[in-house]
Length: 519
Image (tube, rainbow, N blue to C red; front, top):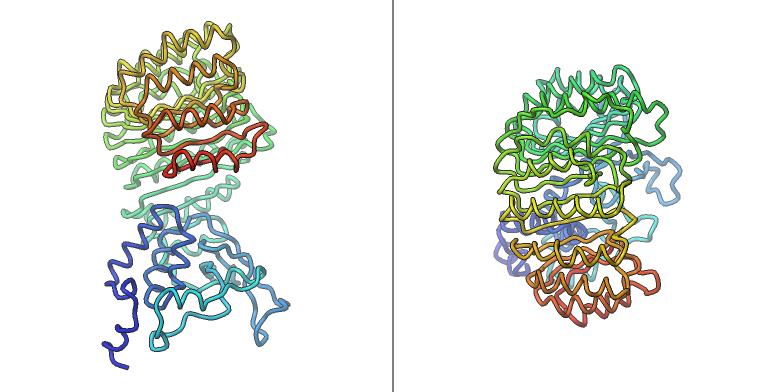
Protein backbone atom coordinates (compact mmCIF):
# COMPACT_ATOMS: atom_id res chain seq x y z
CA UNK A 1 0.00 0.00 0.00
CA UNK A 2 1.42 3.35 -1.03
CA UNK A 3 2.01 6.25 1.36
CA UNK A 4 -0.84 8.20 -0.25
CA UNK A 5 -3.28 5.35 0.34
CA UNK A 6 -2.07 4.97 3.92
CA UNK A 7 -2.62 8.67 4.61
CA UNK A 8 -6.12 8.49 3.14
CA UNK A 9 -7.08 6.07 5.92
CA UNK A 10 -5.80 8.36 8.67
CA UNK A 11 -7.92 10.80 10.59
CA UNK A 12 -7.00 14.52 10.56
CA UNK A 13 -5.41 14.09 14.01
CA UNK A 14 -3.25 11.17 12.86
CA UNK A 15 -2.17 13.08 9.75
CA UNK A 16 -0.57 15.90 11.72
CA UNK A 17 3.24 16.22 11.65
CA UNK A 18 5.08 14.42 14.44
CA UNK A 19 6.27 17.65 16.09
CA UNK A 20 2.63 18.84 16.32
CA UNK A 21 1.58 15.52 17.88
CA UNK A 22 4.43 15.88 20.37
CA UNK A 23 3.21 19.38 21.27
CA UNK A 24 -0.33 18.07 21.82
CA UNK A 25 1.05 15.29 24.01
CA UNK A 26 3.07 17.79 26.03
CA UNK A 27 -0.03 19.95 26.50
CA UNK A 28 -1.92 17.01 28.00
CA UNK A 29 0.96 16.38 30.38
CA UNK A 30 1.16 20.03 31.39
CA UNK A 31 -2.52 19.85 32.33
CA UNK A 32 -1.85 16.76 34.52
CA UNK A 33 -4.00 14.64 32.22
CA UNK A 34 -1.63 11.71 31.84
CA UNK A 35 -4.46 9.18 31.65
CA UNK A 36 -5.78 10.82 28.47
CA UNK A 37 -2.24 10.97 27.09
CA UNK A 38 -1.80 7.21 27.50
CA UNK A 39 -5.15 6.50 25.91
CA UNK A 40 -4.27 8.78 23.04
CA UNK A 41 -1.20 6.60 22.52
CA UNK A 42 -3.42 3.53 22.24
CA UNK A 43 -5.84 5.11 19.78
CA UNK A 44 -3.70 4.31 16.74
CA UNK A 45 -0.12 3.50 15.73
CA UNK A 46 0.33 7.00 14.31
CA UNK A 47 -0.21 8.47 17.77
CA UNK A 48 1.59 5.78 19.75
CA UNK A 49 5.24 6.85 19.41
CA UNK A 50 4.93 10.60 20.14
CA UNK A 51 2.47 10.08 23.01
CA UNK A 52 4.43 7.29 24.71
CA UNK A 53 7.73 9.15 24.28
CA UNK A 54 6.22 12.22 25.95
CA UNK A 55 4.73 10.09 28.74
CA UNK A 56 8.11 8.49 29.45
CA UNK A 57 10.00 11.79 29.34
CA UNK A 58 7.55 13.43 31.76
CA UNK A 59 7.08 10.49 34.15
CA UNK A 60 7.62 11.05 37.86
CA UNK A 61 11.07 10.48 39.32
CA UNK A 62 9.52 8.34 42.09
CA UNK A 63 9.99 4.96 40.45
CA UNK A 64 8.26 1.71 41.41
CA UNK A 65 10.16 -1.45 42.37
CA UNK A 66 9.08 -4.29 40.06
CA UNK A 67 9.31 -8.02 40.60
CA UNK A 68 8.98 -11.22 38.58
CA UNK A 69 6.03 -13.51 39.12
CA UNK A 70 6.95 -17.00 37.95
CA UNK A 71 3.61 -18.72 38.61
CA UNK A 72 1.17 -16.15 37.27
CA UNK A 73 -2.06 -17.88 36.15
CA UNK A 74 -2.20 -15.79 32.98
CA UNK A 75 1.41 -16.19 31.86
CA UNK A 76 2.00 -16.95 28.18
CA UNK A 77 4.13 -19.90 27.06
CA UNK A 78 5.98 -20.05 30.37
CA UNK A 79 7.17 -16.44 30.19
CA UNK A 80 7.83 -14.60 33.42
CA UNK A 81 5.40 -11.83 34.27
CA UNK A 82 6.61 -8.49 35.59
CA UNK A 83 4.40 -7.20 38.40
CA UNK A 84 4.23 -4.01 40.46
CA UNK A 85 4.00 -1.50 37.62
CA UNK A 86 1.77 1.56 37.80
CA UNK A 87 0.08 3.12 34.85
CA UNK A 88 2.09 6.04 33.49
CA UNK A 89 5.03 5.49 35.84
CA UNK A 90 8.56 4.14 35.49
CA UNK A 91 9.58 0.96 37.31
CA UNK A 92 12.88 -0.82 37.82
CA UNK A 93 13.58 -4.54 37.99
CA UNK A 94 16.69 -5.69 39.85
CA UNK A 95 19.02 -8.06 37.98
CA UNK A 96 22.04 -9.95 39.39
CA UNK A 97 25.39 -8.37 38.49
CA UNK A 98 23.74 -5.83 36.16
CA UNK A 99 22.15 -2.39 36.44
CA UNK A 100 18.37 -2.54 36.96
CA UNK A 101 16.15 -2.98 33.91
CA UNK A 102 13.80 -0.02 33.33
CA UNK A 103 10.17 -0.41 32.26
CA UNK A 104 7.17 1.86 31.76
CA UNK A 105 3.61 1.02 32.82
CA UNK A 106 0.94 1.21 30.12
CA UNK A 107 -2.78 0.40 30.14
CA UNK A 108 -3.20 -3.17 28.97
CA UNK A 109 -5.46 -4.15 26.08
CA UNK A 110 -6.96 -7.36 24.77
CA UNK A 111 -6.24 -6.16 21.24
CA UNK A 112 -2.91 -4.56 20.38
CA UNK A 113 -2.99 -1.40 18.26
CA UNK A 114 -3.21 -2.53 14.63
CA UNK A 115 -0.51 -1.73 12.13
CA UNK A 116 -1.00 1.25 9.85
CA UNK A 117 -1.73 -0.94 6.83
CA UNK A 118 -4.58 -2.54 8.81
CA UNK A 119 -6.23 0.76 9.70
CA UNK A 120 -9.14 1.53 7.38
CA UNK A 121 -11.02 3.27 10.23
CA UNK A 122 -11.05 6.63 11.86
CA UNK A 123 -9.76 7.19 15.39
CA UNK A 124 -13.18 6.73 16.99
CA UNK A 125 -13.66 3.27 15.47
CA UNK A 126 -10.11 2.27 16.32
CA UNK A 127 -10.64 3.32 19.94
CA UNK A 128 -13.89 1.37 20.23
CA UNK A 129 -12.16 -1.77 18.96
CA UNK A 130 -9.61 -1.68 21.77
CA UNK A 131 -11.38 -2.99 24.85
CA UNK A 132 -9.60 -3.03 28.24
CA UNK A 133 -8.17 -6.13 29.89
CA UNK A 134 -9.60 -7.50 33.15
CA UNK A 135 -8.66 -5.65 36.31
CA UNK A 136 -5.79 -8.02 37.24
CA UNK A 137 -4.15 -7.32 33.87
CA UNK A 138 -4.88 -3.62 33.69
CA UNK A 139 -1.23 -2.47 33.57
CA UNK A 140 1.41 -3.98 31.35
CA UNK A 141 5.03 -2.90 30.94
CA UNK A 142 6.98 -1.85 27.91
CA UNK A 143 10.73 -2.21 27.93
CA UNK A 144 13.40 -2.68 28.98
CA UNK A 145 14.23 0.84 27.94
CA UNK A 146 17.76 2.19 27.34
CA UNK A 147 18.75 4.38 30.32
CA UNK A 148 19.67 7.25 27.99
CA UNK A 149 16.03 7.50 26.89
CA UNK A 150 15.04 8.56 30.42
CA UNK A 151 14.61 12.13 31.54
CA UNK A 152 14.02 11.32 35.22
CA UNK A 153 16.31 9.33 37.50
CA UNK A 154 15.45 7.78 40.87
CA UNK A 155 18.53 7.25 43.00
CA UNK A 156 18.67 4.73 45.82
CA UNK A 157 21.09 1.92 46.61
CA UNK A 158 19.24 -0.32 44.15
CA UNK A 159 19.62 2.06 41.19
CA UNK A 160 23.17 3.37 41.61
CA UNK A 161 24.27 1.25 38.65
CA UNK A 162 22.25 3.49 36.32
CA UNK A 163 24.26 6.63 37.05
CA UNK A 164 26.93 6.18 34.33
CA UNK A 165 24.34 5.65 31.58
CA UNK A 166 21.37 7.76 32.72
CA UNK A 167 22.69 10.75 34.66
CA UNK A 168 23.98 12.77 31.72
CA UNK A 169 20.56 12.88 30.01
CA UNK A 170 18.48 13.29 33.16
CA UNK A 171 16.42 16.42 33.64
CA UNK A 172 14.96 15.45 37.02
CA UNK A 173 16.68 13.48 39.80
CA UNK A 174 15.25 12.20 43.06
CA UNK A 175 17.62 11.00 45.81
CA UNK A 176 16.35 8.97 48.75
CA UNK A 177 18.69 9.07 51.72
CA UNK A 178 17.60 6.27 54.07
CA UNK A 179 20.77 6.12 56.16
CA UNK A 180 24.03 8.01 56.36
CA UNK A 181 25.81 5.12 54.64
CA UNK A 182 23.25 5.07 51.81
CA UNK A 183 23.53 8.83 51.36
CA UNK A 184 27.32 8.62 51.21
CA UNK A 185 27.19 5.92 48.54
CA UNK A 186 24.87 8.03 46.37
CA UNK A 187 26.82 11.25 46.85
CA UNK A 188 30.16 9.50 46.21
CA UNK A 189 28.79 7.97 43.01
CA UNK A 190 27.54 11.37 41.86
CA UNK A 191 30.91 12.93 42.66
CA UNK A 192 32.77 10.27 40.67
CA UNK A 193 30.46 11.02 37.72
CA UNK A 194 31.39 14.69 37.81
CA UNK A 195 28.43 15.93 39.85
CA UNK A 196 25.04 16.91 38.53
CA UNK A 197 24.93 17.39 34.74
CA UNK A 198 24.45 20.89 33.27
CA UNK A 199 21.01 20.03 31.82
CA UNK A 200 19.55 18.91 35.16
CA UNK A 201 16.51 21.03 36.05
CA UNK A 202 15.07 19.50 39.23
CA UNK A 203 16.65 17.84 42.25
CA UNK A 204 14.47 16.30 44.96
CA UNK A 205 16.26 14.99 48.05
CA UNK A 206 14.42 13.03 50.73
CA UNK A 207 16.12 12.76 54.13
CA UNK A 208 14.87 9.99 56.39
CA UNK A 209 14.90 10.80 60.10
CA UNK A 210 17.60 8.15 60.71
CA UNK A 211 20.16 10.40 59.01
CA UNK A 212 19.24 13.38 61.14
CA UNK A 213 19.50 11.28 64.29
CA UNK A 214 23.11 10.33 63.57
CA UNK A 215 26.01 12.53 64.62
CA UNK A 216 27.50 12.15 61.13
CA UNK A 217 24.29 13.36 59.52
CA UNK A 218 25.57 16.93 59.11
CA UNK A 219 28.34 15.61 56.82
CA UNK A 220 25.64 14.50 54.36
CA UNK A 221 24.31 18.08 54.18
CA UNK A 222 27.86 19.39 53.65
CA UNK A 223 28.57 16.95 50.79
CA UNK A 224 25.20 17.63 49.16
CA UNK A 225 25.77 21.40 49.42
CA UNK A 226 29.10 21.07 47.61
CA UNK A 227 27.44 19.23 44.70
CA UNK A 228 24.44 21.54 44.39
CA UNK A 229 26.54 24.71 44.59
CA UNK A 230 28.54 23.59 41.56
CA UNK A 231 25.43 22.62 39.56
CA UNK A 232 23.01 24.42 37.25
CA UNK A 233 19.89 23.16 39.03
CA UNK A 234 16.81 25.34 38.61
CA UNK A 235 14.48 23.70 41.13
CA UNK A 236 15.61 22.24 44.47
CA UNK A 237 13.32 20.40 46.90
CA UNK A 238 14.50 19.14 50.30
CA UNK A 239 12.07 16.92 52.22
CA UNK A 240 12.82 16.09 55.86
CA UNK A 241 11.00 13.10 57.35
CA UNK A 242 10.16 13.04 61.06
CA UNK A 243 8.26 9.78 61.55
CA UNK A 244 9.06 7.79 64.72
CA UNK A 245 11.71 10.13 66.06
CA UNK A 246 13.72 8.63 68.91
CA UNK A 247 16.46 11.25 69.41
CA UNK A 248 14.89 14.73 69.03
CA UNK A 249 17.89 16.64 70.38
CA UNK A 250 20.19 15.27 67.68
CA UNK A 251 17.61 16.02 64.99
CA UNK A 252 17.19 19.62 66.16
CA UNK A 253 20.92 20.25 65.92
CA UNK A 254 21.26 18.49 62.56
CA UNK A 255 18.27 20.33 61.07
CA UNK A 256 19.41 23.76 62.26
CA UNK A 257 22.98 23.31 61.03
CA UNK A 258 22.13 21.24 57.96
CA UNK A 259 19.64 23.76 56.59
CA UNK A 260 22.10 26.56 57.27
CA UNK A 261 24.82 24.66 55.39
CA UNK A 262 22.58 24.14 52.36
CA UNK A 263 21.37 27.72 52.21
CA UNK A 264 24.70 29.42 52.85
CA UNK A 265 26.95 27.14 50.81
CA UNK A 266 24.73 25.03 48.54
CA UNK A 267 22.49 27.28 46.43
CA UNK A 268 23.35 27.21 42.71
CA UNK A 269 23.39 30.60 41.00
CA UNK A 270 20.84 29.33 38.46
CA UNK A 271 18.21 28.44 41.07
CA UNK A 272 14.63 29.53 40.33
CA UNK A 273 12.65 27.58 42.94
CA UNK A 274 13.56 26.34 46.43
CA UNK A 275 11.31 24.31 48.72
CA UNK A 276 12.03 22.87 52.17
CA UNK A 277 9.25 20.66 53.54
CA UNK A 278 8.52 18.16 56.30
CA UNK A 279 9.06 17.99 60.08
CA UNK A 280 5.32 18.32 60.62
CA UNK A 281 5.31 16.63 64.03
CA UNK A 282 8.75 17.67 65.23
CA UNK A 283 9.30 20.53 67.67
CA UNK A 284 12.50 22.56 67.93
CA UNK A 285 11.21 24.50 70.92
CA UNK A 286 13.84 24.52 73.70
CA UNK A 287 16.03 22.21 71.60
CA UNK A 288 17.90 24.78 69.49
CA UNK A 289 20.53 27.06 71.01
CA UNK A 290 19.67 30.76 71.04
CA UNK A 291 22.54 31.64 68.69
CA UNK A 292 21.11 29.15 66.17
CA UNK A 293 18.07 31.43 65.83
CA UNK A 294 20.08 34.53 64.95
CA UNK A 295 19.75 36.04 61.49
CA UNK A 296 21.82 34.27 58.84
CA UNK A 297 22.99 36.10 55.72
CA UNK A 298 22.06 33.81 52.82
CA UNK A 299 23.62 34.59 49.41
CA UNK A 300 20.30 34.30 47.59
CA UNK A 301 20.60 33.77 43.81
CA UNK A 302 19.22 36.73 41.89
CA UNK A 303 17.39 34.23 39.67
CA UNK A 304 15.21 32.96 42.55
CA UNK A 305 11.48 33.35 41.89
CA UNK A 306 9.87 30.94 44.38
CA UNK A 307 10.82 30.29 48.01
CA UNK A 308 8.81 27.86 50.14
CA UNK A 309 9.68 27.19 53.77
CA UNK A 310 7.05 24.52 54.29
CA UNK A 311 8.48 23.14 57.52
CA UNK A 312 6.34 22.51 60.55
CA UNK A 313 2.56 22.86 60.87
CA UNK A 314 0.00 24.99 62.66
CA UNK A 315 0.89 23.57 66.08
CA UNK A 316 3.47 26.22 66.94
CA UNK A 317 6.51 23.98 67.32
CA UNK A 318 9.11 26.61 66.49
CA UNK A 319 9.93 25.85 62.85
CA UNK A 320 8.76 29.30 61.79
CA UNK A 321 11.25 30.94 64.15
CA UNK A 322 14.00 28.72 62.74
CA UNK A 323 13.28 29.51 59.08
CA UNK A 324 12.58 33.22 59.63
CA UNK A 325 16.29 33.71 60.37
CA UNK A 326 17.02 33.16 56.65
CA UNK A 327 14.58 35.75 55.26
CA UNK A 328 16.88 38.75 55.18
CA UNK A 329 17.77 40.29 51.80
CA UNK A 330 15.51 38.19 49.59
CA UNK A 331 16.13 38.83 45.88
CA UNK A 332 14.16 41.68 44.37
CA UNK A 333 12.70 39.46 41.65
CA UNK A 334 11.08 36.95 44.04
CA UNK A 335 7.43 36.35 43.06
CA UNK A 336 6.30 33.54 45.41
CA UNK A 337 6.86 33.18 49.16
CA UNK A 338 5.40 30.45 51.39
CA UNK A 339 5.99 30.36 55.14
CA UNK A 340 4.78 27.78 57.64
CA UNK A 341 4.39 27.51 61.42
CA UNK A 342 4.43 31.29 61.81
CA UNK A 343 3.58 32.57 65.27
CA UNK A 344 2.31 36.11 64.73
CA UNK A 345 2.54 36.79 68.47
CA UNK A 346 6.33 36.46 68.18
CA UNK A 347 7.37 40.02 67.39
CA UNK A 348 10.86 38.94 66.29
CA UNK A 349 9.46 36.54 63.68
CA UNK A 350 6.84 39.05 62.57
CA UNK A 351 9.43 41.79 62.15
CA UNK A 352 11.61 39.47 60.06
CA UNK A 353 8.70 38.64 57.76
CA UNK A 354 7.71 42.27 57.31
CA UNK A 355 11.30 43.20 56.50
CA UNK A 356 11.56 40.37 53.96
CA UNK A 357 8.61 41.41 51.78
CA UNK A 358 9.67 42.58 48.31
CA UNK A 359 7.56 44.56 45.81
CA UNK A 360 7.84 41.84 43.17
CA UNK A 361 5.82 39.32 45.21
CA UNK A 362 2.66 38.15 43.46
CA UNK A 363 1.90 35.12 45.68
CA UNK A 364 2.11 34.89 49.47
CA UNK A 365 1.09 31.95 51.68
CA UNK A 366 1.38 32.17 55.45
CA UNK A 367 0.44 29.15 57.56
CA UNK A 368 -0.15 30.60 60.99
CA UNK A 369 0.72 28.64 64.12
CA UNK A 370 -1.71 28.38 66.97
CA UNK A 371 -1.11 31.27 69.34
CA UNK A 372 -0.48 30.57 73.01
CA UNK A 373 -1.21 34.19 73.83
CA UNK A 374 -4.49 36.09 74.28
CA UNK A 375 -6.55 36.18 71.12
CA UNK A 376 -6.40 39.96 70.83
CA UNK A 377 -2.58 39.77 70.75
CA UNK A 378 -2.64 37.19 67.95
CA UNK A 379 -5.26 39.23 66.10
CA UNK A 380 -3.08 42.32 66.32
CA UNK A 381 -0.16 40.35 64.85
CA UNK A 382 -2.30 39.11 61.94
CA UNK A 383 -3.52 42.63 61.29
CA UNK A 384 0.03 44.00 61.31
CA UNK A 385 1.07 41.31 58.85
CA UNK A 386 -1.70 42.31 56.43
CA UNK A 387 -0.78 45.98 56.83
CA UNK A 388 2.83 45.18 55.91
CA UNK A 389 1.77 43.10 52.90
CA UNK A 390 -0.47 45.84 51.53
CA UNK A 391 2.28 48.42 51.94
CA UNK A 392 5.14 46.35 50.51
CA UNK A 393 3.58 44.14 47.79
CA UNK A 394 1.52 46.23 45.36
CA UNK A 395 1.48 43.45 42.71
CA UNK A 396 0.19 40.69 45.01
CA UNK A 397 -2.61 38.75 43.33
CA UNK A 398 -2.62 35.61 45.50
CA UNK A 399 -2.94 35.66 49.29
CA UNK A 400 -3.38 32.41 51.19
CA UNK A 401 -3.85 32.65 54.95
CA UNK A 402 -4.08 29.31 56.78
CA UNK A 403 -5.23 29.45 60.38
CA UNK A 404 -4.84 26.83 63.10
CA UNK A 405 -7.69 24.59 64.13
CA UNK A 406 -8.75 27.07 66.82
CA UNK A 407 -10.10 29.37 64.10
CA UNK A 408 -11.04 33.00 64.53
CA UNK A 409 -12.85 32.80 67.85
CA UNK A 410 -15.26 35.33 69.33
CA UNK A 411 -17.64 37.69 67.45
CA UNK A 412 -15.44 40.63 68.42
CA UNK A 413 -12.64 39.04 66.42
CA UNK A 414 -14.79 38.79 63.30
CA UNK A 415 -15.90 42.39 63.77
CA UNK A 416 -12.31 43.62 64.01
CA UNK A 417 -11.29 41.76 60.85
CA UNK A 418 -14.29 43.05 58.91
CA UNK A 419 -13.81 46.64 60.02
CA UNK A 420 -10.04 47.02 59.98
CA UNK A 421 -8.22 44.17 58.21
CA UNK A 422 -10.22 42.92 55.23
CA UNK A 423 -10.87 46.41 53.74
CA UNK A 424 -7.11 46.88 53.39
CA UNK A 425 -7.05 44.15 50.72
CA UNK A 426 -9.00 46.40 48.36
CA UNK A 427 -5.71 48.14 47.55
CA UNK A 428 -4.26 44.92 46.11
CA UNK A 429 -5.11 43.19 42.79
CA UNK A 430 -5.97 39.94 44.58
CA UNK A 431 -7.63 37.32 42.39
CA UNK A 432 -6.79 34.22 44.45
CA UNK A 433 -7.70 34.15 48.16
CA UNK A 434 -7.26 31.34 50.70
CA UNK A 435 -9.25 31.26 53.94
CA UNK A 436 -8.41 27.74 55.16
CA UNK A 437 -9.07 27.07 58.81
CA UNK A 438 -11.06 30.25 59.49
CA UNK A 439 -13.82 28.11 61.02
CA UNK A 440 -16.52 29.68 58.89
CA UNK A 441 -19.97 28.45 59.86
CA UNK A 442 -23.68 29.25 59.64
CA UNK A 443 -23.35 31.94 62.27
CA UNK A 444 -24.34 35.49 61.36
CA UNK A 445 -20.77 36.74 61.79
CA UNK A 446 -19.45 34.26 59.22
CA UNK A 447 -22.07 35.42 56.76
CA UNK A 448 -21.13 39.06 57.31
CA UNK A 449 -17.44 38.19 57.01
CA UNK A 450 -17.93 36.51 53.64
CA UNK A 451 -20.11 39.40 52.49
CA UNK A 452 -17.24 41.74 53.37
CA UNK A 453 -14.89 39.57 51.28
CA UNK A 454 -17.25 39.79 48.31
CA UNK A 455 -17.63 43.55 48.66
CA UNK A 456 -13.86 44.09 49.02
CA UNK A 457 -12.67 41.63 46.36
CA UNK A 458 -15.41 41.30 43.71
CA UNK A 459 -12.78 40.35 41.12
CA UNK A 460 -11.88 37.03 42.82
CA UNK A 461 -11.17 34.18 40.41
CA UNK A 462 -10.06 31.53 42.96
CA UNK A 463 -11.20 30.90 46.53
CA UNK A 464 -9.96 28.26 48.99
CA UNK A 465 -12.44 27.38 51.76
CA UNK A 466 -10.83 24.14 52.95
CA UNK A 467 -10.83 23.17 56.63
CA UNK A 468 -14.10 25.01 57.30
CA UNK A 469 -16.22 21.98 58.15
CA UNK A 470 -19.07 23.93 59.73
CA UNK A 471 -19.61 26.04 56.65
CA UNK A 472 -23.09 25.60 55.20
CA UNK A 473 -23.63 24.96 51.47
CA UNK A 474 -26.01 27.89 51.28
CA UNK A 475 -23.16 30.31 52.01
CA UNK A 476 -21.06 28.69 49.29
CA UNK A 477 -23.93 29.08 46.82
CA UNK A 478 -24.14 32.75 47.80
CA UNK A 479 -20.41 33.23 47.16
CA UNK A 480 -20.54 31.64 43.70
CA UNK A 481 -23.51 33.79 42.70
CA UNK A 482 -21.90 36.94 44.11
CA UNK A 483 -18.52 36.36 42.43
CA UNK A 484 -19.19 36.17 38.68
CA UNK A 485 -15.46 35.97 37.84
CA UNK A 486 -14.88 32.91 40.06
CA UNK A 487 -13.15 30.11 38.12
CA UNK A 488 -11.78 27.81 40.84
CA UNK A 489 -13.25 26.88 44.23
CA UNK A 490 -11.80 24.57 46.89
CA UNK A 491 -14.53 23.09 49.06
CA UNK A 492 -14.32 21.86 52.65
CA UNK A 493 -15.68 18.51 53.80
CA UNK A 494 -19.13 19.48 54.99
CA UNK A 495 -20.30 17.94 58.25
CA UNK A 496 -23.92 17.37 57.23
CA UNK A 497 -24.11 17.65 53.42
CA UNK A 498 -22.80 15.25 50.74
CA UNK A 499 -20.15 17.03 48.72
CA UNK A 500 -21.46 15.51 45.49
CA UNK A 501 -24.82 17.23 45.92
CA UNK A 502 -23.13 20.55 46.66
CA UNK A 503 -20.95 20.21 43.56
CA UNK A 504 -23.96 19.43 41.39
CA UNK A 505 -25.75 22.55 42.57
CA UNK A 506 -22.65 24.73 42.15
CA UNK A 507 -22.22 23.62 38.55
CA UNK A 508 -25.81 24.59 37.87
CA UNK A 509 -25.00 28.09 39.13
CA UNK A 510 -21.68 28.32 37.28
CA UNK A 511 -21.06 25.53 34.73
CA UNK A 512 -17.51 26.77 34.07
CA UNK A 513 -16.44 26.55 37.71
CA UNK A 514 -13.51 24.22 38.47
CA UNK A 515 -14.20 22.61 41.85
CA UNK A 516 -11.58 20.99 44.05
CA UNK A 517 -12.04 19.15 47.34
CA UNK A 518 -9.81 19.22 50.38
CA UNK A 519 -7.95 16.03 51.27
